[in-house]
Length: 230
Image 1 (spheres, rainbow, N blue to C red):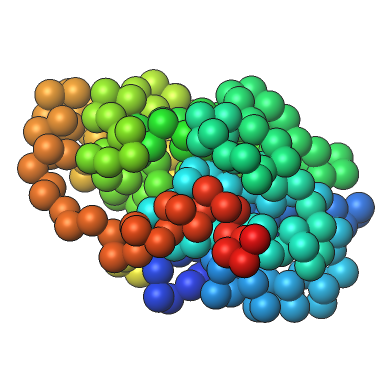
Image 2 (cartoon, rainbow, N blue to C red; image 1 turned 90 degrees about the vertical axis):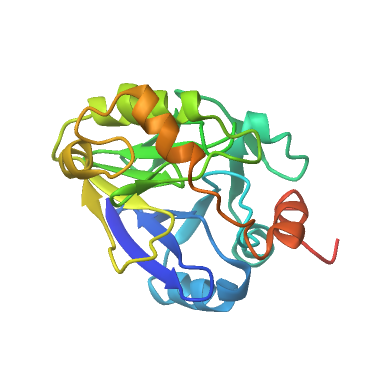
């Protein structure tokens, strides 16, 4: 599987382009509306055939570009069933598998930031959305977030993967681009080094973060899959 990491500086969002080298079948993870032209150009330059437009969750900090990309280049739009999306092509559940040529992408339900968070797992790597970030994790204080669900997703699902599994998050605010499960098990500031649930919950409850700047337009826009003119 080939992996290309792209970045939107305004929202600190990573978009990932995955493709099978032989078949050129591709998937886009967490596109950003303002970067649709960039992504379309890149996909066409590489001669890729987009099969899936994958969302890790209903975002509160940016509007997805998946709907507009679907109109331009095709592909089935995928979000978790709990999103209640009426514009997605596939409402995924834990254990679903999508194929790009001979390569497989597995859906792993990792709620906590929201109730619809998906980690996409391929051989040797995971795309963890807002669940697991480098030395960090997503906030749990809105969109049906849950400290308990987040702790379980981190410690009982993701941290149980092989330690050399590469971690590709949806965001980074400190200049990191990737990590490994082994690093996060030991060095993650929120849940690493075998922190107890009580300690994790205390950390999460004391964050007192403001709402994302774009939450009022992002969530409704993402429930339309980014097709704002429809």
